[in-house]
Image (cartoon, rainbow, N blue to C red; front, side, top):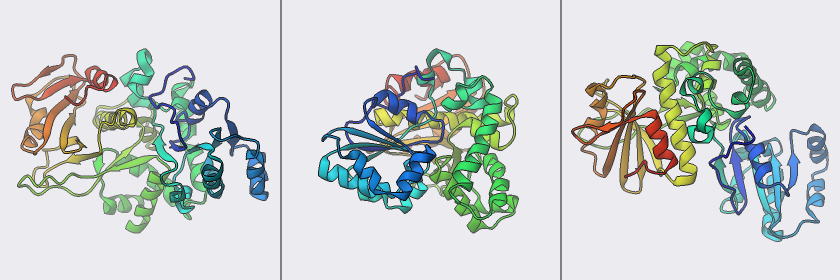
Length: 384
């Protein structure tokens, strides 16, 4: 995967780059900042040296010139370095690439000290555009597209080990939870909620933990970049709308590994996995092409079968997307998109399905194949 071109361009000023383990942050940084001074905090010897003698870090920067780059990989392991980073940005005009797989300790350390001085960027799993000719939707939904997994000779075994790695290194090693067995029981249940409206009470009941504990666990998953909570949109279209968020894992492979289901994708799984994959593509491309200012889902509370999976807002305009795993088109798939047609500012409605033909419905809804959707993302043609 080292030869793949990633969507993310190299910034010209200091930045945080966050993303799950194995998403390719280090590979990307080595390609784009080959001459930078590098601090890899997974190097236990270096980590212990800096922990014992914080002044060592400043000493290693002394010979650098204004504008030089410094890369700190796994910066969340030693967030106290951020105070020094802030000082060197201000006094010596050094530029820093700060790579991390968890935002939790960075938040606790007061990352806002660098507000305005270091952008926050995300490295997402590989998109269809990045995979190019090697993209296979079946493999993407079954094993996901985290580069570490995609590049493996045995993705099933690697994905299974990857989940255990996260439990050991991100959760246990950082002491993020006091009750690790309870958290382990919670994970497969949280995976079952992928693509669903988040019912914290039901999740806690199934996991055998309190509602407060579930909220804490969800915060951990979000801070370690494993999940995102998609908020509900309140359009006030003369209907009462759902207000609870939906839960999405960042990669289909993580969903299936946490459920301990790595065989062929079942029909029951496919819909939610495809929704999550589409959301991942939208988020990845928004880094470079400003696809949206905010993203939501929309669903009237009184109409259980009416929903729009993704509603993108850019300034005062909206774009609605519905995702169906079916290979056959049906006008019933348009129910949610037709219901949201009255929303002021809506300029495009898109149905994405697994069929082979793209066309436009009689009432102006674009019906796209997955390939057509990815072409629109690649060419920045999602918005009309």
